[in-house]
Image 1 (cartoon, helix red, strand yellow):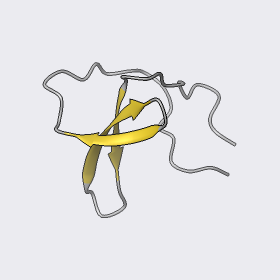
Image 2 (cartoon, helix red, strand yellow):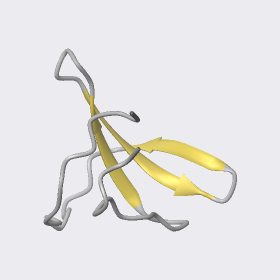
Image 3 (cartoon, one colour):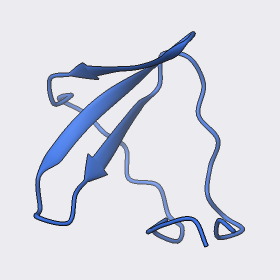
Image 4 (tube, one colour):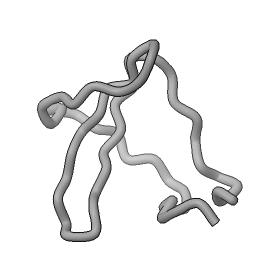
Length: 55
C-alpha cells in the first residue's frame, strides 16, 4: 500500500526519483509513460510522506 498522502501525477508533471545508491533521475510524465529530462530549475517542495516502496 502507498502512504495515504502520496500525490497523483498528470501529463507534463516532473517527478524526482532517488535510487538506493543515491543516484537521481528526473522524469516527465508523458501520455503513455515517462521520459528522462534534465534537472528542472524550479521544483516546488511538497509536504507529505516519502513513498519508499509498495507494500
